[in-house]
Image 1 (cartoon, rainbow, N blue to C red):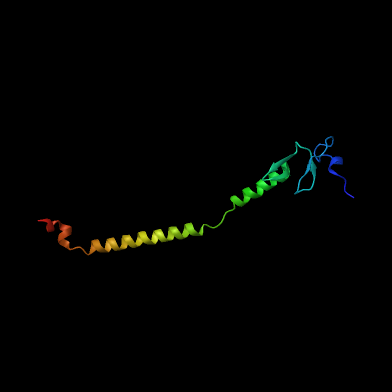
Image 2: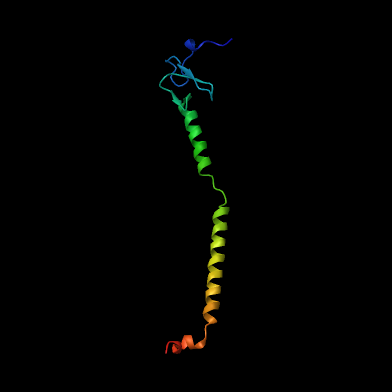
Length: 103
């Protein structure tokens, strides 16, 4: 048989009565040790664990596939532009290069 909340004590402060139970670790805590976060009462250690998990998810490194693909496409387009412009310039008549076309 479980004892009621009125007879439980805080897991961190043995001299204080518990006010709530953390849903993750299932320990009882006094009002100073438990806080409300995103609509639920949670202890500080479970809250920091949740923050660590969320931080790791945000900083998880993935291979930047789209960035590499964009770089490859940009390099190919630049190369093609240089290739066709250089081909156009090399096909110009010699008179244009000598400056005699303007006379």
